[in-house]
Figure (cartoon, rainbow, N blue to C red):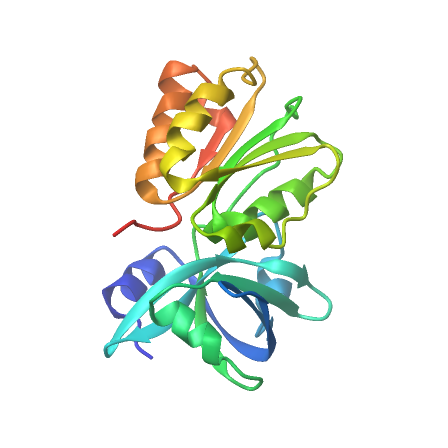
Length: 234
């Protein structure tokens, strides 16, 4: 599949292309699906870091469409990993529902990157939703002994059954979508310290609103904030 103008731009930024092969899939919940892959040489060539993500290419009405997904349980020596799909209407979700062993999909790696905060904060402050859950789990796994408070946006009751990888020292706060921004603004202030680290990954509008609040109103230094809009609300 040709990747269109987006693929051309990515190539200019030295992006690398790979082909992944499906080895299996499982339905985690009614609205969440995990697909397993061999990596086509990705992990050996690129390596692995927390919250690492790749761009998958799907065909959408005859045109290329790319979406980003975080690697789940990457194993460098085996050359395997999984990806998790929050299911809704769209070509990416449709592809994941039909994925069977032997199917292949093209992928591009460019733009991913994350360093564990140094110095470590007293507590990770995390805001996310089902689309960013794999990245949240990866982030928590990068500093497994560090306490964390996670504000997690929900839109369906099944979102409470998602595969959170949390421990006793993790405070998970599920919040309905319509209340997320207000709740986070109200509660986050109590947690911010001079060495705070805040990680935000929701839809683009929510991410921008909360990032602006954290930087301007709470005065958290820019290098202690990591944010990324994972999707665009219709």
